[in-house]
Amino acid sequence: MWQSENQLKMNRKLYSATVTLTSVSLAALLISVWSDATNSIDTALSKWALGSNTPNSVSVWQGVSLMGSTVVLGVLTALSVCIFVIRHDWRAVKLIATTMGGSVLLNNSIKWLVQRPRPEEIYAHTMPSSFSFPAGSAVNRPGIAGGSNS
Image (cartoon, rainbow, N blue to C red):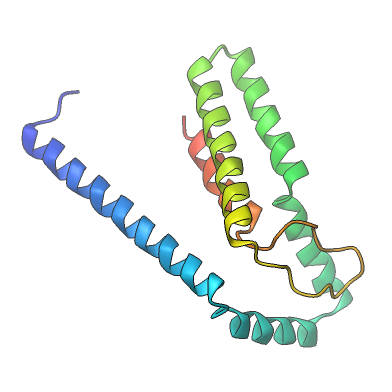
């Protein structure tokens, strides 16, 4: 389907606005993390979470964390790739590999750049050993969503 010149100009403006807004938002977030402006929020939320903990809520949050873990996301990515290979949908395979590879690269690059330490462990051996920002599960979810929309 061909687009008119006006539609192309509109799409370019929308794309430029989206990239600009995303870049400014990421820069503001990075500055707030670097300046420790988010520590007061983290402290308040940690106190609230500890005060609200029950054995059931801890189990629920551990399950939620597991769903976004590297192992689970890796298995889901591998299964998705296998399904598309079986279907000979090479475009989808490339898209998933590119989006997930890109999100892992982006996540690790930002972690290396920011190097924000994790908060103290509340429960023994529950924290990953990597830096805390950004959350890998949050960075990888758009990769999964983008890869699955092929």
